[in-house]
Length: 78
Image (spheres, rainbow, N blue to C red):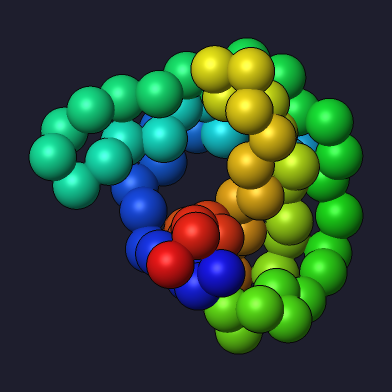
């Protein structure tokens, strides 16, 4: 596993909560976030970085998204 920086479409609440709504791949493909299973502050031990970790369902697959001070990345298989 490694770290891949990505673009995210997100919703921002008045309380400051950020909810990812879609992942936008480098080639422009867009993948909707179907459901957020968990959200907490955590380290990415495999790819490096610390921030908010979102465990999400995207097209039926569980993915780990991280927001590290405004930079979004996810764990991907090498």
